[in-house]
Image (spheres, rainbow, N blue to C red):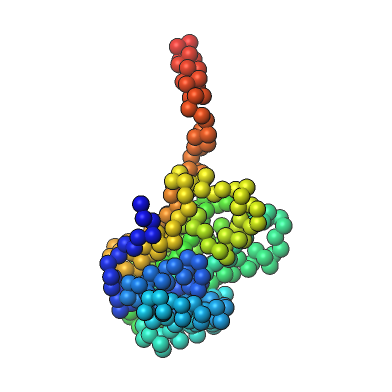
Length: 294
């Protein structure tokens, strides 16, 4: 199967403009690329302006689309408002927001300083709130409808997870924000949805989450029933669908794309897959023996 196949028809996003935070690298870059290939204009933002400008040139050359690279620290509401204003000046309108900017690293929680914890909360939760509020206010005040906010969360936003507690805390907040605004802002023509990805390796995030030789000691594909990592195009396909008009009746949903990883971890007896086939014969005989005695 070709996991990198592209799903939507050409020009499916023609005439639309999207802001993608953290759009200069990783999954943000992959989503931005596909949006451009489908005819959209894209604003990519991050704190590293020099890197953004290089990615802008790369994406425009690759896709022939229009890209604006605007430096913005999403933790700062004034910078977010300036980013929105500049985006509107360039493109005239914004049709959707993809809150993708994130920060994460692994650590026992008791080893974290308060500042380290706050850094993740500020980027993920506060940054998502800032961008959503700034754009939402603009859309509502100008009576602009058919708008979409798409948030990137995680499966542990609804299960929790040790060793990434700041991220789990922040992503859970983003998920609550997604569902809450889906109800409150629907009357304004603003939909709100989320994607919860499983393991999609990216150079930056992956080096922080499974640094050094941890990659060799912990093969995360073993946790995935499909026994593989996700392909970036698979996530870009889902994101493009959710920001398109084809998903106009989807609101307040979080869609998991993880090959079944979180369900496997949630099932109490899923670890039984480690039992070899030969042992199941003995298990079955034991159970039948006990049933006869009863």
